[in-house]
Length: 292
Ligand SMILES: [Zn+2]
Image 1 (cartoon, rainbow, N blue to C red):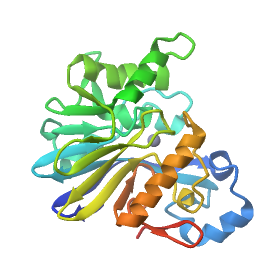
Image 2: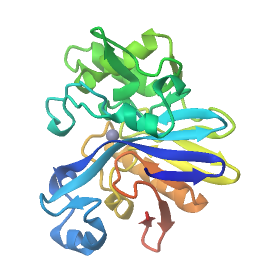
Image 3: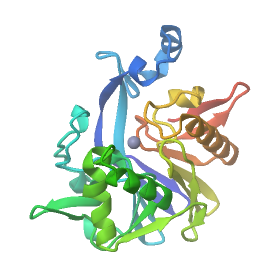
């Protein structure tokens, strides 16, 4: 089990999947063979699979426990959810909830579910299938969603040209939570409580946010998909292919890297491979990850 401490807070990674998915060129067309060999010494085996020549991505949640609250950050893909064009995340049947239980939280003990954004791989476990209906998986939790993301995906989901958005997961994993009156829509910057602040970091999606944590003078940042891979720390202008606004995504990435390099925050992304979290150092040329 991967566990981190930040002041009085503990943070555990809850794995859903961790596998080679995209070819390097498909993900980052800017990556030349020379650059790849320059970084090869740290890429394999955790961030790149030489056998398939594919980039390895993790899909995980973070279970944050602070002040007796159990907070789930980002909710992966979920079980039994259809993603016809993403075979490696299609109709999953993983023991994710057992792993969450082993990490110290049954579904009914989760106090808060917080989604950095509303893409399909961050909202999946918000709901589960019961008697043919999608109902909230965490019956006692409040769910914190970004209001700008909610409005953007809602608009696209009622437009016949773009519906259903995110493989239908807006309808399966977001709307049922809102209909059950368990959702709190927030617009950053927003202070959630003594420890957590919500900051806008748009571009990957219009309302993408990061969660800043502070406990006993130590800091962490749950950065969602501000970057998907550590190569993007070296090359912050490299975007993951899917963005609502590519230039805004680059600006947000630089802003978050700058912020974490200057205050020493533990950085917790959603898809970076083992050891899954670490720090950012500023260098003469830009930034360098210090993960493990
Ligand atoms: Zn993602």
